[in-house]
Image (cartoon, rainbow, N blue to C red):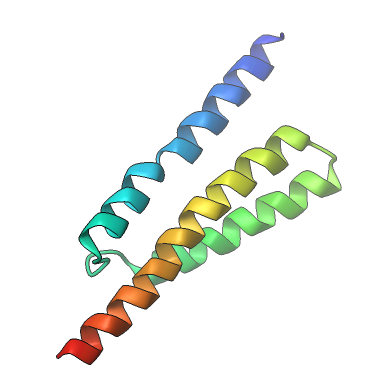
Length: 91
């Protein structure tokens, strides 16, 4: 495996895995009050663009890594909307 492949794979794993603690925390606490909706919306859009880019250049590592990241970041975004709505109703 070439050095570029090793570095790219490591980057993909680390950047995708970085969202796991956030998803777990939001799920456990049932709160996403301190999470910026705007930041996550822009980030999810950017990751979707990376996926399209990966398809255009036929780079499966780019596609797969960003699909995982999109799934995790979109989960946080959906939970934020769901839990913020529930908190607003409870007031």
